[in-house]
Amino acid sequence: MREYKLSDIYIGQADGETESNNDKFIDMFYTGNNKCEELNQDSKYIITGRKGTGKTVLAKYYLYEQSKNNGLLVSKYGNLKDLSLHELIEFGDISLSRKIMFNFQQFYIFKEIACMLIQNKKSLREFKFNPIKYVKYRVRQNTLEKFYNEKYNNNIHEIITGTESSSNEIQTSLKGRDAGVDAKSINSVYSTKKEKEFYKIVDTIKHYVFDVLKYINILFIIDDFDDYFIDDKDKTLRFLIDFTINVKEINDFLYKISKNNRCIILLRDDVIDKFATQDSNIQKILIDSTVKLNWIEGSNQMELKKMICNKILNSNKEFKNMSISDVEKLFFPIDKHARTKGRKKHSKGFFNSVIELGFGRPRDVIVLLNIIKNKNPNNNHFTYFMINDALLDYSKHFIDELKNELSFHYDPSFIKTIFQVLTDFKKRFFNKEELELFLNTNEYNIQIDLETFINLLYKQGIIGYFIPKGKASKNGFYTWRYYSNATEDVDLNAHYSIHKGLRKGLNI
View 1 (tube, rainbow, N blue to C red):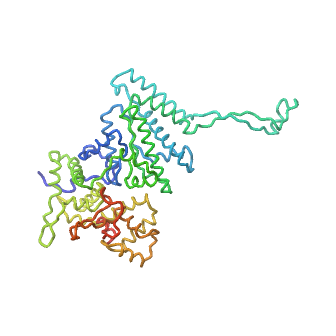
View 2 (view 1 turned 90 degrees about the vertical axis):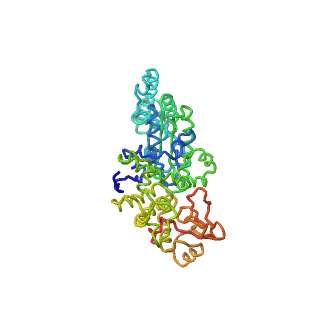
View 3 (view 1 turned 30 degrees about the horizontal axis):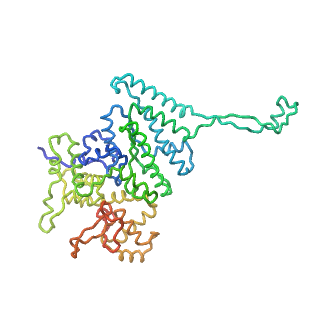
């Protein structure tokens, strides 16, 4: 076996959309965590996880698998920003009430499904040369297409009738003026055409869609909820809650036709966590409907390591006779230098050390390993020391990712203030009293009380707090909010630690 270099391996892409366009994407996708099987359950239609956990990658792979196994499936991977365009076409640049928007969301989804069914005609061969079934399908598909084209090419109109008074100037030329008709009192009946509002045709679209779906199936995946923002954060949350409810109701409608029909949406879990502040009943839907991506806890860390090794294994044909375990031994061996005299023995494996620098997301691991690979292309394996060399570049990226995540919840000026406080504070470990003293002796416009500020840092994963196992604090550990078993709020009497992945970028 020849000696491979890091430049010979493919780690993956930070952006799921980009990675899914790789011609080896299907081979490189890791199925060991069984998330595809979980998503296949009838009640599941929400893929959730923190930003960078692989929601897009999972959705793209699921779409591929469903399309491969069902020749009568029509599918589309859409973006929620498309709704904004439809909204502008229908209403112009005006603010809509929640009631109108709720109903428009449903109309938008059915309109998109209708468009999918029109643009993706199935052939007789795909009906396994069953002419009777095929003809029935085409009749209904043509009916839907005719309706759709009349609306969006020729327009569907309704007749509006009424009366209007005729002007004196016109009345003087009318025949019959000398017959004693009072010109000022004459009214004329008029008729004009007015385009029907969306809510007057949604039932018709549903009816035609239903007829076509008796013969074929649809899978509609909607991503990029980050692209649909309303300045008012509460309105944004209500919009997303309503969309989630609408998709649930539409899926119930689609399931009645066939269990092979489905709409799937992708949502960040930090956004979903805020749903309860606006709607207490939404939790009942979320419990049964979500497939959550979490790579950081227990055996999931092992799955994340296998996922990375699987990408390497299937990205280069020279590795075709290897296993995931072989790849791990080849590129991620025990670092002998970590045990040299005068240095502490590493108690954690290489991957655990990498995972601690992120939020347990594939994106964090991929970014760090790619930085290391680019800095050390001629090395034949990864080492602990390479992590330290790459840490500054990685930390800056990690901070930018976190700022992007925070932008959904907070204003840019406030986000800037958060990181300015941490940079100026220059402490990796601290307690509440130390932070309070610092804020009291410096002028920062944080606009919230100290306890709320510390909880904010904790809930965003910026700090963790120390939990002693016993009287000897050295046996304790730091807990982080992004673990599912973590407490909802921070312990205000504890000691805190700045996340390891942020320290270099904050220059602390």
